[in-house]
Amino acid sequence: MHKVLVPLAQGCEELEAVTIIDLLRRAQIEVITAGLDSQNITASRGVVIIADTDLDTALKDDYDMIILPGGLPGADHLGNDQRIKHILIKMKNSGKFTAAICAAPKVLANAGILDNKKATSYPGFLDEAKNTEISNDAVVTDGKVITSRGPGTAMDFALTLIESLEGKEKRDEVEKGLVR
Image (cartoon, rainbow, N blue to C red; front, side, top):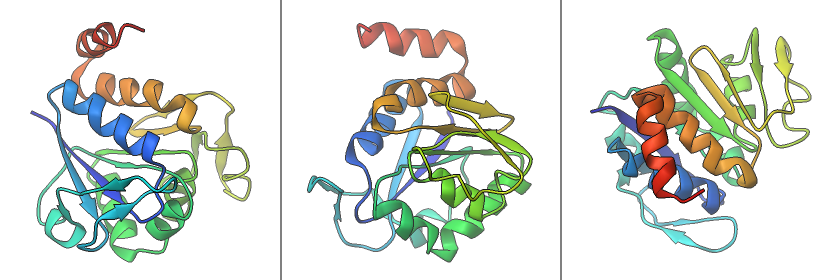
């Protein structure tokens, strides 16, 4: 069974976070949600999310993928956390998946994950990313880096994450259950 980490920051985009968590769990992927601290997360629209654990505890384990939900100020909090930058670089150097949606691809860019990669984000968030080919596609996969545009693309993003980890058959199975 694959294991993924979804760090949750205060002000994250709840639609993105919950869609990612829900769909990956439907695919029987072990999803660990981790708050940057031990507090409940109040998302950008006021929804309260209770993380499985705090980030320090979560970082004691190994993961096949790390997925960063966007939203503001959530993506800024992720970007300002040195533990996030460290785990992103560790995942890249280990040949594992890194993924981000909405404003969070900027966190990948600032950690050097998007260097010489094609990526997408919420409009404008990668404008200053050097050495990154910016796309307007809903979801972009470039090697082990997966990015997406925003709340409206969250379901396609999550299905792409499932396919990357478990294959097309599992993606199709989960998607069929969603009656899309």
